[in-house]
Length: 448
Image 1 (cartoon, rainbow, N blue to C red):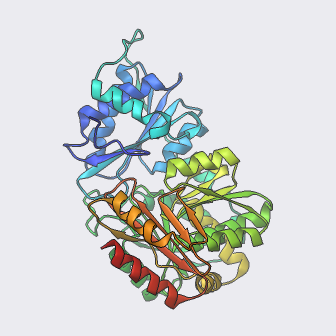
Image 2 (cartoon, helix red, strand yellow; image 1 turned 60 degrees about the vertical axis):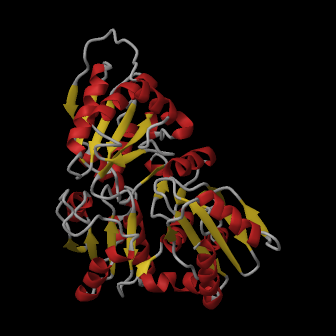
């Protein structure tokens, strides 16, 4: 039958019918059977159900004889960091990131923070959870103790930049009442920045709405604060702050597509010739800018587990995904929502340019639709219909991640979401805004 909360690269579902303490306990038992020897780290986000799920997960691990290290309230990347930095057997983050209030989830990694996805063990865990039949344990019940990784984690972040190179910029930071605010407060004394904090305190009731800056309706609070305070840029995160989003000095949202190229260019200046991983949704700008900066562009399937697998396979310096995930070799090939803004602020300071000026040429060269989501009854059927109409006469048709079709002056990608019942459309052109808008409207009409 299968369990609905088990997705392509994590566990995520509605509380309590799709995910609950009983399932979390069984995940702990099944995960322990899969991992090598050693402790397992557990962290949790601010959601109201996260503590009880975390406790149930810990009981499952301890009943399997595991030592559990509780990081407490944290971001997903802190679980990755703790697992790799402390040489643990694995780690679990209890989070539903940007999903609705009544959802929660689990992100699992093995040693060295290697993700456990459907292709690398998650299906086996699902099977064991569904059966509820676990191996007998000879050792006594495991133990639980706290692990404060904050200082080592923040030191690792700051080591990626030169704080002395950063100018005293004014920065709006919107934690969305998730967990990012606590890390901003820890980093602030080491940086010559003036932080303007909004929605800063962690609050699992999310009084200002679920933190998901990809939604246009969740952007205005950050954008208006940038304009009101005359800030140099704005930053916003999702609840577990593994995704970071940028607003320029005018309060305009800057698509991750353009941020990826800026970060790649900055990193390639220090390390020319390295590989950079990108996902298949929007590609022209990324490939061209990486080539101009002396790097090698490597395409990957979307999704944090798939991106990390690609990063490790080609030993990439950096990887960027359209959804706002940014991956770094020096962060154990994992995604971080803190490193991108630190690196970009250093880049802004060194170039002495505004963010809008830094992305202007990219926007003009490659206008984009932004990702547009549509609910459809049959994702595969719609994609097949679109391919039958648009593939004839195309210069390139790819199926690495959904459907990508390229013509000489425009291209698009159409794919089903890995975590939600949605069809996602991205369109770009070569310098022609009108063509991009025309083709976007045309495709949306076809999709229905």
